[in-house]
Length: 257
Image (cartoon, rainbow, N blue to C red; front, side, top):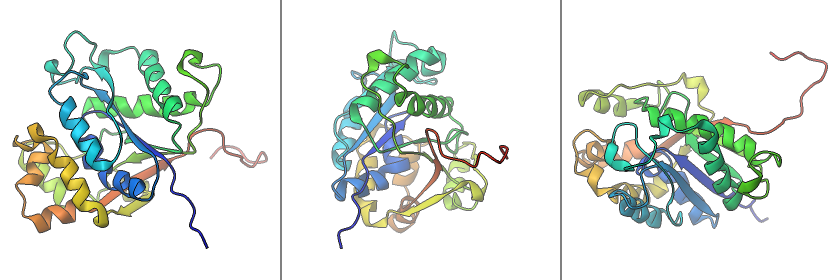
């Protein structure tokens, strides 16, 4: 009996390296199974220093070319000189830019940050979550953003996340360099994926972000200084929450609860 095809997957993340750290395993997994995969990166300009590293990481993951919205990083003015920071950009404008990518790529599944901003609560992560949730719904509605292409409704939206139990050793490592560690309740995680068969590919993609690997506080640099066995344990599991987009049939005899 033939197995069901693996759905196409589009990641939407705040910065270059988020795609590899948070969903590198499932991106590699889907690509290995023959699915189309891609990544939209919301901040940093196409001519910035991090763009070539992003391109190299996506090549490792088999996720195609960089798709950069070009907004500025909230904490790094060199990310997109002359452009609005993501946190300052008009919401409607940012949604429209992302809707165009969703309609062009036509993914069955979209993955983004969780609502709390992914462990450290980075404002770009929070804003990316908000924009993606709204864009996934808008992409399927013809009257919205008609200039962005024909409507397309992804069948599933997932938020990459970390629960109180799932953060494990990673939380301690982040606290040691002065970073906050924000987690969600364990029940918030709906999907836990063992990506150990693709951990090597994921780590190679993380290493492609050489500028972050060379620094002490970013997560790629933290991971690079760990013993291989400890690092492999951390990156071999990915956690997600399924956020269903679009209308879902319900019981008309019941009130919302």
